[in-house]
Image 1 (cartoon, one colour):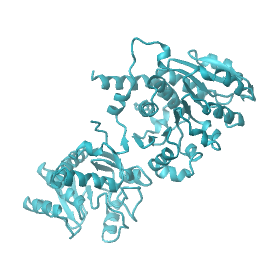
Image 2 (cartoon, one colour; image 1 turned 180 degrees about the horizontal axis):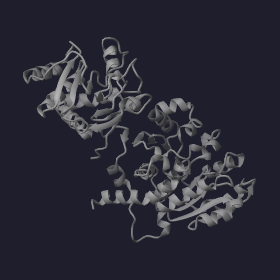
Image 3 (cartoon, one colour; image 1 turned 90 degrees about the vertical axis):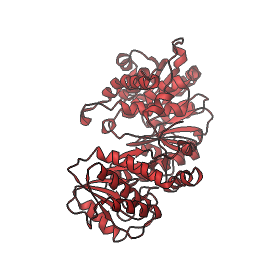
Image 4 (tube, helix red, strand yellow; image 1 turned 135 degrees about the vertical axis):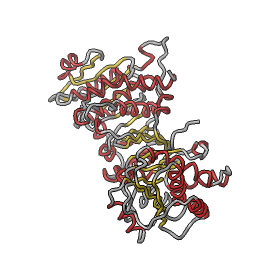
Amino acid sequence: MDKTFSILDASNARRIDYQAIQEIGIPSLVLMEHAAYQSANIIKKYISQNDSICVVCGPGNNGADGLAIARLLQQDNYCVQVLLCTNHLSEDEQIQLDIVKKLNVPFCENIQNVNVIIDCIFGNGLNREIKDPYFSLIEQINMSNAKVFSIDVPSGLDASNGQSLGICIKADYTVALDCFKIGHFCTNGLYHCGIIHPVHIGIPYQLHSEDSCKMITSSLVSNLLPDRNPYSHKGTFGKALMIGGSQAMHGAITMAAKAAYQSGIGTLTLMIPDSIGDIMAQKFDFAMNLRAPSEEGYFGSGAVDSLKIHLNDYNVISVGNGMGQRDISTHLVIEVLKSDIPVILDADAFWAIRHHTSLLHRNADTILTPHVKELSRILNLSVKEIGENPIAACKQFCLEFPNCTLILKSSVSVIGKENQQFVLFNPNSRLSKGGSGDILCGILMGIFGQSRNALESAIVASYIHNQTANCDKDAACFLPEDSLNNIELAFKNLRKEKTGS
């Protein structure tokens, strides 16, 4: 059973919780104890027993979780007190309150003189505007210098869309119970959540088996990583054509080509303007060059005829890297999409198809790798709308273009096909440089050449690309070349996890 964490809106998270309690028969207090234990373990990684801790408990089961956390921290000899900011207690919260009183957990009237605050005011079900006294309390917490932990979601954050409900806790850490919430990653979510730690709380994994959105983990990716059969040949791993390059941007296709070769492609041909043929021959030895007619350093009008002659010689094609935003680029992309060959679209290809999106309704695999602005050229959504809710944007794209696979690149990347979405959450500013997307395109081509599965290739390539930036080099000094050099290590680590060696 895949134990990858799901990503749900508030209503579906509550539905899963209800099913575990009412249909499976797990008592809510048992789940609460798991939640408190796991949360306390996360919190203890960041605090010391010299800290003064206040657990702020509101109405409902989020407040009950807080009371249980306070009890567990006190048992481990932490200096903890409870601020109970409600008289409206759920049945489970009343039970937890009775327990902490019997154990003499101290209570307080305010958050003064504490340096750790655990926010258990509201859970993931809140969808109304925050008003006093809670508004003033959240304001005080945000103005304090305390280290703040939020349990499940920061109080005041809409768990479904990441909107602030008038005011919202600014947490340093958030412990996500059972699953991530969509609001963690949307609109204001990342700003308010801080570092997010998901924890399992005893809800059976099979209740999440039909969830459409899941988090990408190393274990998921290692299982999807294509094997390399020793009894194989170069044709086994893909015969690829990469279309792109120009006098102004030959670096883009160079980086993509190097990444494809380092990611396992069998053979690679670069279709480039003949004006950069000699340059590319010097820059990269391993690919064959298909030189097409050029004009002013870009592909010329005769390039389409050159493509038609050779198009069917390949079993995967990428197009877009460094080719420029010119009419000939549109003609080349249209010709590729009219074929029945798997296609990877990147970079300038999204400008080229902005008025020809109907061509995305093709039977062959089509993988798109846009960033937020590039996707806005395809969907009827603004850059702001996509950036604030990339998961919703991915779902909309997959609904409109069900035969395509999308990699929406951002600090939170979303991969989707049909009714399945996967989120890659490991923000790293080292990748926020020109050339990073070209390297992803190359890795994707290398993986697809081996697996021939569009969604799996998108997941694996996105993860590997992200892992290439995990290094000690200062983020400002990280170069695309460093990413290329780290591809091997990312593969090696996944192979080790896959084989257990």
